[in-house]
Amino acid sequence: QVQLVESGGGLVQAGGSLRLSCAASGRTFSSLAMGWFRQAPGKEREFVATISRSGGITTYYANSVKGRFTISRDNAKNTVYLQMDSLKPEDTAVYYCAAARGPIVVVATTAVDYWGQGTQVTVSS
Image (cartoon, rainbow, N blue to C red):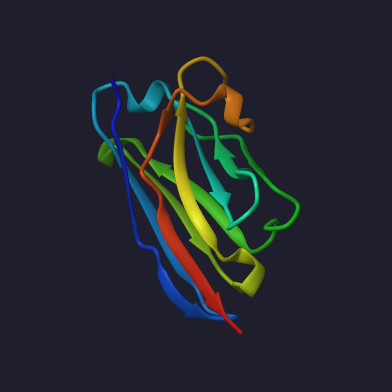
């Protein structure tokens, strides 16, 4: 079993930055594909970014965040990060950390094996 705990959310003005962290329990972190998803009020949970297992060589981003967000991982610390720059009001959502055992990367909610509890990000205009 893997437990994921997010931190780093908060309130920021448009154009500002936040860094989300997700700490994972267990000894299998490096073997997990990791990702971030978000869910705004009244909307479905959507993919934001993913990083491949092991060395994290491969990353993918949703078009809406490409060039503004950066995902990274530190296997020694069992932690994945999401650096969010140039934030926009439409980035407001609850952000969830996700992990998957099977795939190399995780881009679909149906592929997720473990979810964090979520952290609120609010961007004011």
